[in-house]
Length: 118
Image (tube, rainbow, N blue to C red; front, side, top):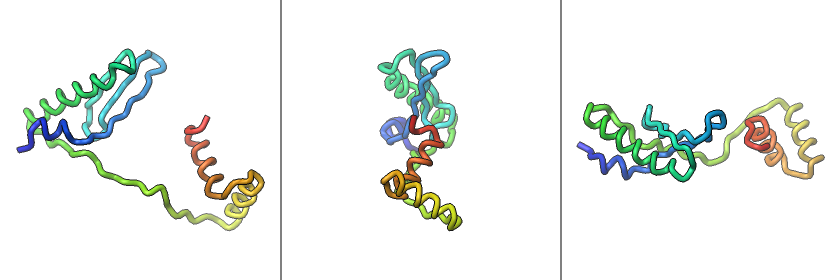
């Protein structure tokens, strides 16, 4: 049986989101469903994450709940995309007008539409 120390030392990814409505920060471990915490300021959120993870794992072990290990998806940053020739032509022309590669132009468009760039 795996111990709490085993799970505590695994590199679980966590997410921290600023709560713009109420203030403070909300943090969670996506691989540990329901393992969520909150802090009024950013300096406290990491300690709260560690505490939340420990309490969550202790409860899961006590209740014989199956604990997922950290997901190990790796992304290369590359994918193939097929598109109509007319769209390809338009993108290539717009990229040329901007003085950048079509790859850079497509990344710009994707990130702009995902609200990653402001």
